[in-house]
Length: 380
Image (cartoon, rainbow, N blue to C red; front, side, top):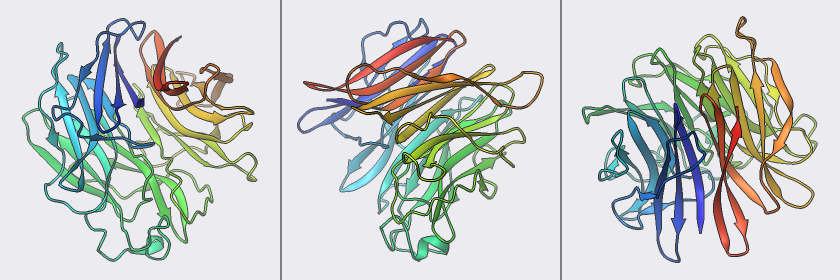
């Protein structure tokens, strides 16, 4: 059984990671492509301790590519959840022994991690953390918190530096309990973290916080869009964030569609002032079925958003490309209708990476013998 796919690209190099499960163990694997995703080499196991990975839904292994390859995943150690990371140096396809990205001996739930690699080879990891679940919640989460009353979940970010040191920062408190996080770095070194926050009285909207000091401290969160989604439970469906070469911050997320309709829709917004304000949201899916689990990638003058969507017979993988006029700082053009990428079998939890000449999309597909990872390379 294979699931939890993630993609990263740098130039013509693409790396895909996923989890392989047997009856009793789960391991993380990575495979490299040197030709923009047209072909991949022999997979290498990422986790040095066999079977220590835990993967489910929004808790997939995540990969970043830059000065080498970095992968993060969730493990169980001594009955506690732990966020682990392993690195393969540039030009190598062998991972060093894994390390834990946070302090040791923490209590509470932990996971839903994301990561990005900065221009200085610093790796930034964001995750949800219940180390202070016993502490009193405040604000909206004090009364209604994802159906987990009293179980506080906070958002952390760690900067893993090339010299082996790291700095940890608490980005936000009392966040939505089990939606994936997103983290990205800009060309100027700014770090952005995205998550689903809980706004009074119990609204589950997207928030973004920025750090101008390499992840040591973060500014107060900015609300991306007032979607009006009141929910007494966690949707287990979070945002994806990326920064383009001009420094525009892009975010895609699922939320309740206007008027209810077919359920959740996929929306996109962007910021051209470093995440201080965001443009009005634009719907990306075609409103024909419940859409979920978006991921996005930015390259040049295009942003590609992928998601899974319920059709008449099955869930399938969809994609849509957004573009802008390079002469103006506006992403107002949505190109064509969404493309259906998966075949005749149920598919979900897509990933996407963009190279200068292509877009690579991967997903988990159900087959008669179990779940498999599919990768498809599209034109630019």
